[in-house]
Amino acid sequence: MFGILALLALVGCAVCGIIVLIKLFQEKGVLHGILGFICGLYTYIWGWMNAPKNIMFAWTACIILYVVFAMLSGGFSYQFGTPTTP
Amino acid sequence: MTKATLFSPVLSPILHDRRLSSIISGAALLQVLLVSLRLGGWPCPFFHTLGIPCPGCGMTRATLFLIQGEWKQAFVMHAFAPVALVGLSLILFCTISPRAQAERIADRAEYFERYTGLTALLLGGLILYWLARLVILRAAFVRLIHG
Image 1 (tube, one colour):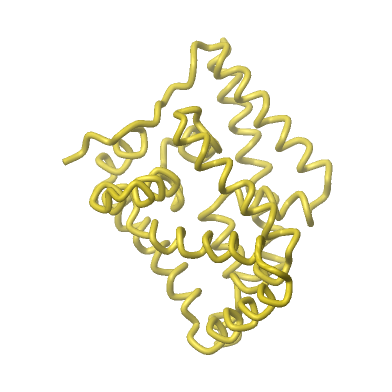
Image 2 (cartoon, helix red, strand yellow; image 1 turned 180 degrees about the vertical axis):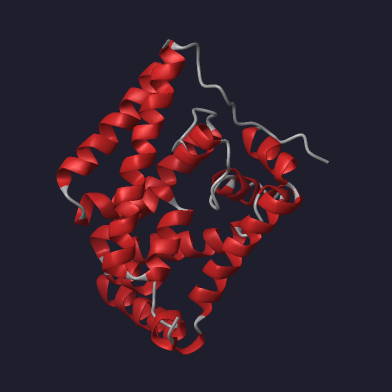
């Protein structure tokens, strides 16, 4: 249940991110847009400075909800560690 | 794509904007700290909804490996980690430097970007690198990012 809610929150994050990314492409050009595509954090920061605040509040809420639901569903489904690839 | 687009600066506007560079520096340091403490950090919505790593996935861990001196691990995780580390170091340096010095560095960076188009080359190269990993070694790429 919480896993599905976390996934929905993540979809919300993706949608908000794409909206802000499109705005970034339109206002700052292709290279800044590519940088925003590569680094979602840059898009998020740029969004707070230049995008409509309602989208950024929605994005932030989705992030918080994702973290909460992911923790309630039994922890994050991935863990960071030393990769074991050869 | 016109020459004006390819040679337009990307890093130097960030270096010129003190507020933006300080926010980016703070966010980057926080991200590195969270990942180093195994607390997660910025969740990639593309990877966790679609199962497809974005071009920046693995960059934080690769940067951490670089900082720790584990070059091979860093390049396995993300080959563009040195580029990211240099860029972030410049942003951090301009944030903490006196304004006059930061402006000089930003002006030099702008001249370099406009004259060489290096930023466009690096960003384009990073996208090609991502596409190559996705097309040729997709399963291994996803496993690597998943950890």
